[in-house]
Amino acid sequence: MVERMRQMERIACLGGGHGLFSTLRASRQVADHVTAIVTVADDGGSSGRMRREFGSLPPGDLRMALAALTKDSERGRLWEELLQHRFGGNGALKGHAVGNFLITGLSQVMGDDIAALDEIGRLLGIKGRVVPMSPEPLDLEAEVLGLEEDPREVIAVRGQVAVASTLGEVRRVRLIPTDPPAADPAVEAIHRADVVTLGPGSWFSSVIPHVLVPGIVDALNTTAATKVMIMNLVSEPGETSHMSMEHHIHMIRQHCPSLTIDVIVVDLSTMPGAAVRRHVERAAATLGARVIYRDVREDDNRGRWTDRHMPDKLAAVLSEIAACPHADVAELRNIPPEY
Figure 1 (cartoon, rainbow, N blue to C red):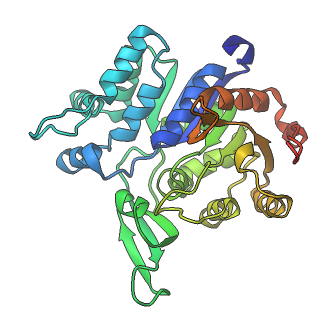
Figure 2: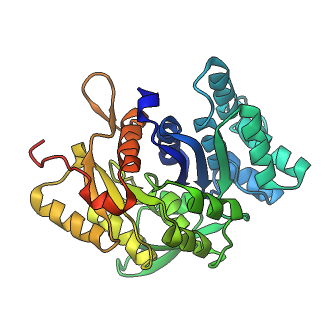
């Protein structure tokens, strides 16, 4: 089945964390070469500790992307488990992931973060690359409402972890520095891809940061690839609590008015009623996008939905999109509303 679905040579996936992990697991089934383009603003946990001590790129999301692209074999699964393994105990190493040490250590030895990631990719035998969206670590700052007695007062919240866990309403985010460079391999991957994906993931801390990097936006707006935005299945506590799907799309537009997208994938189980669906599709149209509704949600084998995308289902949708000529994406068949 995997071979029958294989439709494209190259795919580039933008994101971070668990959302990017699922997209990469899907993409490796349908593309000969997968490039993960990863956010570099993480400041929590093991990544934050290593970033503060060494001034390095936060390795956590890079590690997860490498793990997602390991081979589906006994050896590949062993490497994945090792990369993701966290030390226990009560000492200084508690909570650190082995893969974080590998990335940071090899970067120091080679003097080049991207060269180190490529070398680890060769060691793991992955068919693709993992690259940062920017060659330097970045900070995230958000404008947040609802944290003070006056609910209209805007408070600046700094740090990816603080933004992701805020109890207030995030109105806008920015990167520090505000005009960061894009990593050259990331720009090249977007230009060479047949399909580029954005999302799913933490909207303000893993997805939107990509469209705040001018070089990434320029590449997205000039690539010949089909650009696909994959919507989240649920709102996240804190960061996007009570945000509608329409609002998610408007947030992309607000942060990057020049961005265009070709296709937006919405899971069937989250498909709203006809009236709300029209609002979602109007929001998508501001990005130049067509909304398609597909079954991409994982279940627990007991008929109950989870909050994760199922890689096999997502792979089939990406294959379907890749098989459609870029100029004809508006003709993609849609699932009837009464599904």
